[in-house]
Image (cartoon, rainbow, N blue to C red; front, side, top):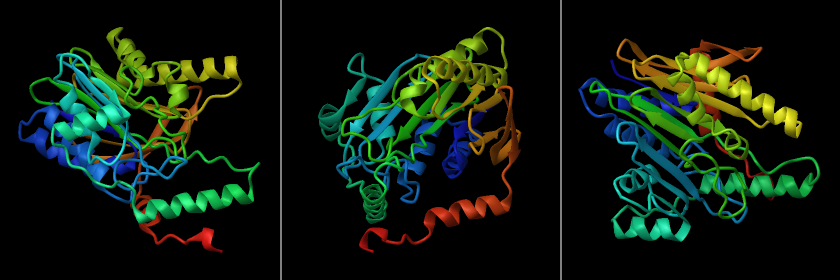
Length: 324
């Protein structure tokens, strides 16, 4: 049995590429890097890679992580600027005996030394998003938050040999403070995988996700015998409740998981969360969480109309509101 699961609709093209690798007997390592790279390279997905939304100084800073579920090796980068495909840099760091998590200038020096491709990641489209947001903030200073667009792509893959991997990539919060790193590259929070059990990955407000180390918790629940669906729902409900009890509110928390047999699960505290999945017996499809009741998530296959509207919205010409 082989399979992959990923957060958000934006992952489905990459997931399809990864599935082609797995179907031919390729490794989960190769499949997940190929799949996430596909998402990173598409300029219209404004929360990942090329075209990602910038920080408050209009710089694109990228975070990414990779983990091997058999060796437990991992690599991660944070606040990397002007390098293409941070997931590939993270994968390369995973084979190092130490210095597996590098940030900022240190990560960039490593990437340059290892010959990774440099690329200006800030696009003209992202500049328009930024300038429009600054304009709105200036007009409605007390009514509008700058933060949005924190849709991390996270994936878990299982190959025919039983190897499992997990990976994440994101540009983080829109207009974040320079140097801010969220949960995505943090092992145990943004992702965790153990080939003897399964893997999980998360998306949402990183500062809240890190308070529960939710990906590790999901894998722990699967270790105890809970199904991926039960483990996801249990972990999200627990963290959501704790945050509300202790802090009065909880940010967006969404997770996906897959076990070593290819069974999968999803949970969220927001309706409208989408995910993509493919297995040996299931073609790549997108699903949407349309109902949450008492911590239980119900999801439906995305309609063709929804899929077409999703892409049309993301590729539509942008109005330069800041010039008005």
